[in-house]
Amino acid sequence: DEQLVADEDVVITLSSRNYAKRMPLSTYRAQHRGGRGVIGMQTREEDDVEHLVVARNHDKLYVFTDRGRVFALKAYELPDASRTAGTPIQNILEAMQQGERVSALVAIRDTSAAQFLMMATRKGFVKKTALSEYASVRRAGLIAIALRKGDELAWVAPCGKDDRIILATRKGKGICFKASDARPMGRPTQGVTGIRLQKGDDVVGMGIARPRTEVLSVTENGYGKRT
Image (tube, rainbow, N blue to C red; front, side):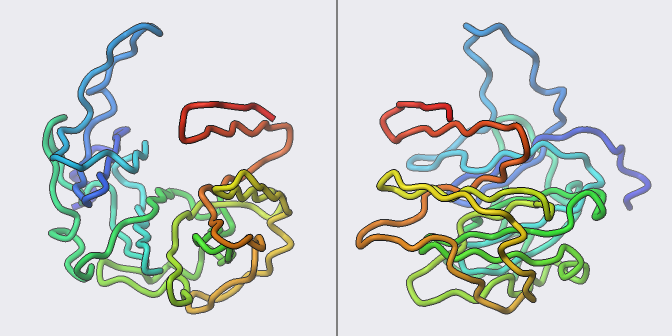
């Protein structure tokens, strides 16, 4: 099947209610700064676009859920839809459980480009796993991280051994540490403490920082700061 699919650039979107779709990148046109934009996805009431990934049709797409599970499929296996359509991802990944939500989408073509996947949970745990651990993942899914009660997997990103990991919390705290400080672990493990949280605080963001980069922090009410 793959040989019959053009390996073109596509935009993959997923809403908070798990409606997914794939569109050619050419669907969008470049606009000036004051442009109004175009509708990228028609959402239902109390639904909003939560994940957007630019990939190519032949890329391998890893789908991580809040319950610590991971599924894998080729990008072209997602339905090719118009700008205003979408399909419940449970129709594609039938092993997803009731109420399970997607927390991260990671598109990877060349496994040599990223050595590890870094994960972070709401309660401040992080885990680094070699990308080779996910070679056998299929649509049926596998455990990506063991979670404590009340915790959920919220961020996943590819990283290298020289990268730095940044975690930010709801109360404005932040921490930056080397990816090499977290030793690689197997899939069904919990990980290690990435940041110690105060009472009532939780992690709201994870970023991968490379040399000579800056950090942009944005608050809930729209204030931004570059550091």
